[in-house]
Length: 339
Ligand code: SAH
Ligand code: SF4
Image 1: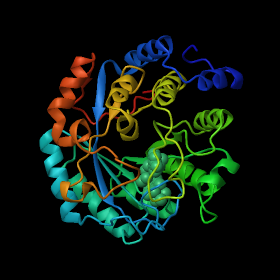
Image 2: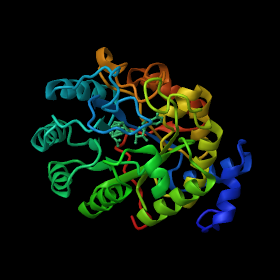
Image 3: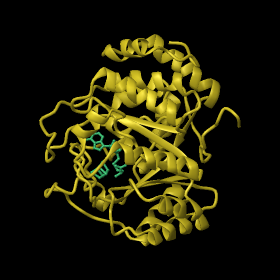
Image 4: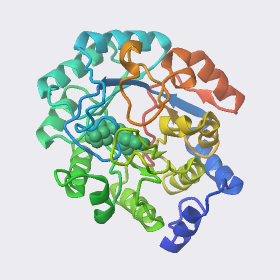
């Protein structure tokens, strides 16, 4: 698969159908990432601001219907406190992620965002708090938010229905993504690999949707089952297929920011490195306060310690050097082709 070319559906389907690591594809993708992003890997401090969620995605441990979930939400002071720690550790992007928590009003989020930007003007703030109205997204942007992560999860209507209850819709998700783009955010989308009922054609449709959206960031990770969700008995997604798809994404979207995700490293630490040598150029270590970190349980045994922990930044840097990359100290904005 050559970079910059648009492969046919059947060519993409053939790549996605094979479960093994493809060394050639991986080095092609690595060459492309080095052309655009050199050997830099961007670090983001992930702050999980709330484990409350009003939604009921069937795959997620934070779903409202999970009575076993442990709930918490961080206060403004707690968020600022971890930003301070993160800044000291060298992070220049903070990602505020959470369930769709109705207690987080627009004014609260705006206040938190503008306070972070005032204290750390050289940092980027990324939000990942789900679906909101256009006016809310606009207010967050005006308060200083730079980026927004909202995975489309699956671009196929029928598959979307199998993963979400009636109260949610793919149409709404897409509207949110295009609204975020229009407002001016650096936008991230993506999907789970191996989510229940996912077919090869679904993945091809996901890639086509991403081509239409043309996001700045693309996050993919294997589905990992959660013990207290309707999908508790489903198999986890394939880590090697995820790595393959990271390479495909790098070749289709040479300028995008692609993380080696937590769910990938949860399946096996070795897959984080495999993703990094196969086109990924971002990692998002966890900065969430230790006293609540375990409560943000999207899926079983979600990794939040060792190299997944922001406090391990020196080990992370050493790991990167070890495999031929360099942790960047900048905000790590997207390099668009026209920039
Ligand atoms: N509520 C926000 C952000 C938190 S969820 C949102 O939904 O956008 C962040 C991501 O975690 C989701 O987009 C989903 O793709 C991923 N996720 C949730 N449950 C998962 C699971 N069981 N396995 C793998 N990824 C999961
Ligand atoms: Fe809520 Fe996000 Fe989990 Fe869906 S994936 S239940 S929106 S936290």
